[in-house]
Image (cartoon, rainbow over all chains, first blue to last red; front, top):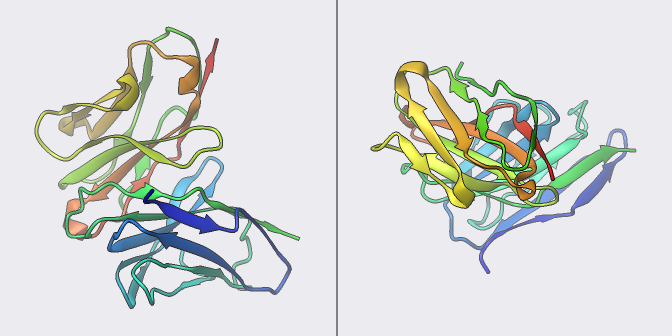
Length: 115
Length: 115
């Protein structure tokens, strides 16, 4: 079955540590996205990528970094500069971005907590 | 900046009651509109979408939404809710002129249906 796989499901970060969240899709989608979900705030866009080797900052990119070396993969690194990283992180993908009416498909998410 | 507002944060209904969840957005140009649902323990999934044409759109599980351009609204409705509709509901907007698939989400509405 096609879909989006996020791993790990739960992740704990120590102070000063960088952690990387994995996102893999086998939907052959061009665009991928990372969102952060906090209670009462909905989903906020961290980064997005429309094509391999290119990505753009979203609304809350500070303290995060991404790479897009392969079409199917879009890992997110939460750096030590992100002072409030505890949240639920969702990865999504969609068909070619110029057709902006394509719905996004979401993974199951990674819950990140601070030790 | 564009924003999406969902007026009801937490709604509690009895089975068979009618549902209407409000969604307003702040952008005067052309938009694509979505409702997503997140059932407990499951990933976010598309409920319905509006791109153009008939402003009344029907989605899965008996849900529908009406786009009222003059009111910048896209309210979600269901004539008779079931216990299985208990979930969190998100309204999302894509600004067509951005030429990206970026979504702006509302804060979400938690729906609790009592059996």
